[in-house]
Length: 236
Image (cartoon, rainbow, N blue to C red; front, side, top):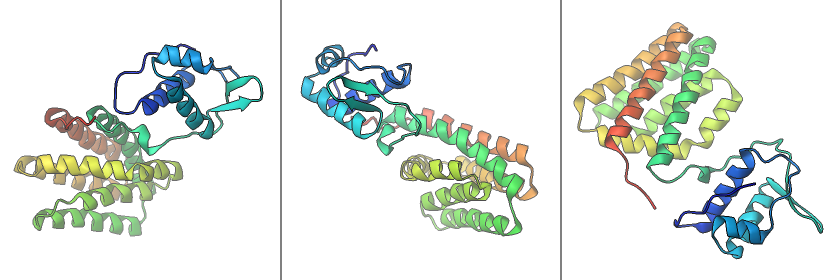
């Protein structure tokens, strides 16, 4: 097991957790004994109390386990563990989130087109109209935008995809809010954004799974392009 030095950032413990966890997940086999606290401290370039707190967190999270008189060992990872704070609170973290949205939501659009019922179409039409109403009334439309995408996920009826998307909902809402704030003075972007949502709805209503998938990918690609051009304030 080889670790990189922790960079000087706001939370040494959080960074130590991330680096140890990454090292384990990227090739440390279950049953492997971790180095001593002193050795991990030396490799990371942080104090032993920082390492001790990081290891306590990973032990509570189930990634490592104590064996009496032997030390800490990597556990068999039979459960996927993901935490809200895995998303870094900076521009790079938001970019990661948007890329994840593109992957997940393009598939939910495909599934929604395959599995929609007349009642589902009515719900999605109402969500689309809610976004349009927010635009007309000068509201930011963040909740309506998020509701449209969550409705598509529910229509797709894949419980795992729905669980992942709902788990990241607060972060998704922040990302949508940031982009809508940046876009609000550009009438062309507003028209394009509404058109994209209408296009996605139309393909789902028609049951055209491939076209719905492509339309969502196009929508997400445009979102990513705008984000990269606009940037986002870096947070420490």
